Figure 1 (cartoon, rainbow, N blue to C red):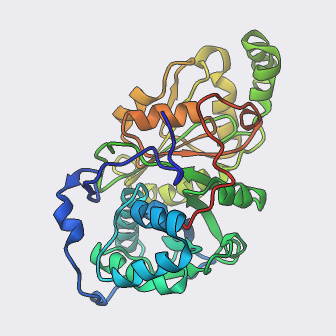
Figure 2: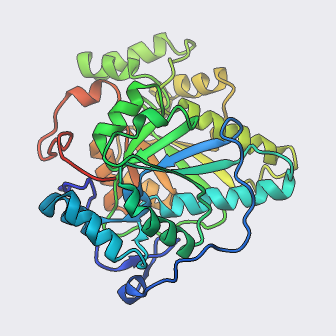
Length: 368
């Protein structure tokens, strides 16, 4: 599967609605009246919130605009955006994920009216501020609750992530994702499948790979250097030694913290957050260490799937997560082929082993 220069796996010309299904193109072309929606709840203070920073190119489909920027330059790009600022962008791959975060917030506010332990989505983009009106109009058109923007006019937005107390950063640009990970911020490059699977509108589902995502790449280094048999021996010998943390451990922690708030109200079986471990590990040979590591961290995972090297795509198609994180492009592409919105976490030894057929886009110039 080839990747486009805007880091998408391709997308058709039809619109995506909030659950990943499609609506006629005419709906996207219909103009909208720039307006401010009716009264919304106040966003939580950044220090109390679970902050999800998303780039404009993963929240919305800006493929056409990106082509204008790449082919005609910044000035023509800005002119086009201003001329079309009353036209909403179509939803992008992160749209359903953001809608699910808002659904969780709605239930949290009902159970804990005074609490600020809520998801807070921040739009982080290196777009020029001139583009801001179109983004605001689009957010209002789609009735999204996003009050915090960061538009850096071509400069890297990474320096602002810590100021926003960011718990997760999603971007279409792998360079920015590398920078964020280097700053100790959970981050991933998001891709768009050709056809997105319909997902739940009431339950947030998040799927994680294990090694080099939730866990460190310690065990993966053994496998790459010495093979499968030595990997199994190593895991058996170290079964009771917890793995070190990986880049997405912190995000699983905050999800678990919110889950416990629902459990405290007797909603364990009806919790609007569900987490999944989807790993190539074998259950009998190396699964125990993964589960014991999570237990040592005080973390629960709702479902654990040990696939023993089998493809992840078919299982993810059944889970229908809003988002899936993996450190290997092979699994990201396989998930996308089955309709899952997948994110690449460029961390660990697997990133130092080039794969044929996947172009390195890290030097590409993009507007996010």
